[in-house]
Amino acid sequence: MTDATTAPETPDANQQPAPAADPAAELGKEAAELKDRLLRTLAEMENLRRRTEREVADARTYGVTSFARDIVGVADSMERALKALDDELRDKADAAVKALLDGVELTERELLKVLEKHGVTKLEPQGQKFDPNLHQAMFELPDQSVPAGTVVQVMQPGYKIGERVLRPAMVGVAKGGPKAAGTGETPANDNA
Image (cartoon, rainbow, N blue to C red; front, side, top):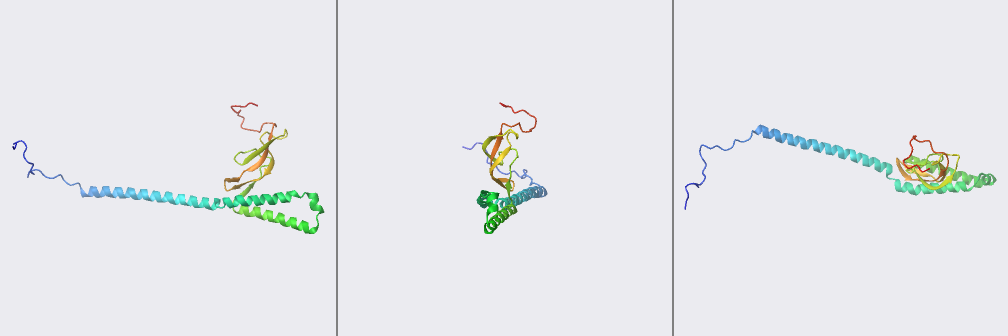
């Protein structure tokens, strides 16, 4: 049963294949794609180089963090040992004890110099406004002579390495004094 309407398709001699795209246009398109890939790869490599430089700089600056945390404890112990002897005992001490104390003081100064050489700086917050990013409040002291929120006693000094806090300073903060000079704005929940 062959139907005359469904004849097998045969190529017609008058019908020509679709013309091929212009080879120059194809090459231009391929060149543009390759140029785009090249530029993206170069940008990616530049970003990788910058990120690596930043990571190396951070490693140099903050690589000694755990060691520095341990060493600042030693510095604190030396400071406490020197403060344990008041001036009266130092004056009464014989020459050998005075020489020992001088040696301990020199060792403490040298230790602090070495820490500073490696980017570790001591925080001395006495008399400064309390900053929770740098200080840890241990207690409040009623003191009318200084503005409220001022550090009036340092229990343990803090340390920074670079821009990061290595250990916050443990401090006593004044309360009850006049308000610290601020921006002139009233806090939203000022219950005082």
